Image (cartoon, rainbow, N blue to C red):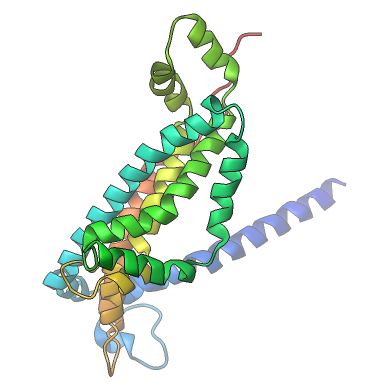
Length: 277
C-alpha cells in the first residue's frame, strides 16, 4: 500500500511538472527571444539560447513614441475601468445579497446569464452608441465599452464573496448601533477583501489585454491601446519577432508584478473566529 502511494505521488508530481513546463514554455520563449540578436531570431536550425544577450530590442520599442503613448492609454483605461467597476459592483452586490429580500438571487443569475452572449453581438450597437455620443476614438469610449463586460462579472464575484460572510456578524454590529454604510465599510469590506481583489484583478487584466473593442473603436494613435499597437508591429512584409517579444514582455509586467504582490490577499478562513460559539 505504501509503495502504491509513492507511485501515485510520483505520477502526480510528474504530471504537475509536465503541466508547468507546458504552461511556462511560451513565456520563457518570449523572454529569451526578446533578448536575442536578430540573427539568432531568424537562424535555422532554431537557436534555443541567444549567442549574445542584447537589450537593443527593448531600447528600440521604448524609443518608439507610439508604443509609449499606447502604454499610457492602456494604463489610464485599465485603472479607470477597475476603479469604476469596483466602486459600482461593491454597493450593487451588497444591496443584492443583503438589502433586497426578494429578487436578489434572480437578478444575480440574470447578470451572469448576460455574459453568455458572444461579444460580437455588441460590436455594432456599441459602435452606433459611441458614434452618436461622440466617443469614438476616445479613451472614455473604451471605458464605457469595457464596463459593459467587467461590471456584471465583478458584481457577481463580489456578491459570491459577500454570501460567504455570516449574517450574524452584521446582526451583531446592528445591535451595537451600526448603520448599513458603517457595516459595509468597516466590517464587510475588510472581510470580503479577497473577493474584491479578485474582481479588481479580473477588471484590470481584461481592460489591459483587450484587443477587439480597442481595434474596432479606435482608429487613431491618440486613443489606441498597447495590444492594438502590437498588431501594427507585425508589419506588412515581415515580422520583427524580437521587438514584438520585447513589447509583449513589457506588457506582461503590469499584470505579473501586481498579481505576485497581492497574493497575500488570497487567504482562506478570514471569517473563522468571527462568531463565538
